[in-house]
Length: 382
Image (cartoon, rainbow, N blue to C red; front, side):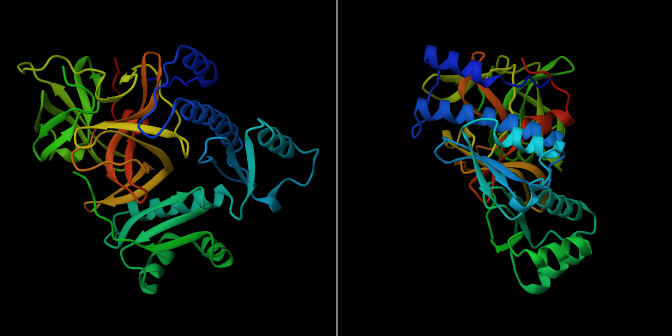
């Protein structure tokens, strides 16, 4: 699946003219149009910033709640002093790229936040890590800090993480700036738990939702959540699991269509819809941005919408540590697992796929990125 970056500005104007934008129960077409335009601007800024390897003055980026602005966070005392330098030129180009950009001054650089989050990922991914006290950790872009959710926030529990996950230099930064890391006590419950995307499927462990159709080595089938099964060979509606991964950045399985079953080929048509949003397109993907409006289809709660709140969420699910998830305030429930998450507007004949439902998050729900699934399993969408 080669990424085809969406040229949203041109596409969205055409969409608006022909009236194909569809709102959910709580969104209207104007808000969705604005949100998608800001998501396109945020992607352009993000790509430019990544070229500079996250300069020290960059704090983060997100879309405002009203979708009127892209908020660019700047560490004021890290702005390049020399106006003749290349770094200053880049800073000016980024900060003045568009009139919709709103500058917000913050204390912490994204480079520091990302470094701390990566150290946590490295520690909790190691064999000797104790994840029994961990619920989740992530970069809260809007609050400009790293959040660590623990079942117990007693000092001895926190000190274990500091001693094992961080070096002396990082701990020094944490002591200097108390806003850098926030430790919270939170004991969350986990909702882990041809076919249309989002339709109910019966699995070896209960019921989940069909994600999106693919071909793997020419064989037709579909992607859904791995935690719905015990492993390869398990039976599922319409076929059997031929590939299964439940670790790292991926909770996904490929169900190969069975030779003898009552279903036709899996479909891109959505089982639960709103307005003109009837199916997934199979030709584009998008870069997720904080506050991007999204939707999902799942058999338990149907079609629901929300916004992305975090693009680098790490958490513990049923004793397994996951990272690289995307968290949102979208409502999901047991049984929605594996259902498709997408941008609720029509481009190239359907909604743009972002991933599949994973389970709960601090904000509401988390999903697995379609790009991370593709990195582990070379499939073809059709």
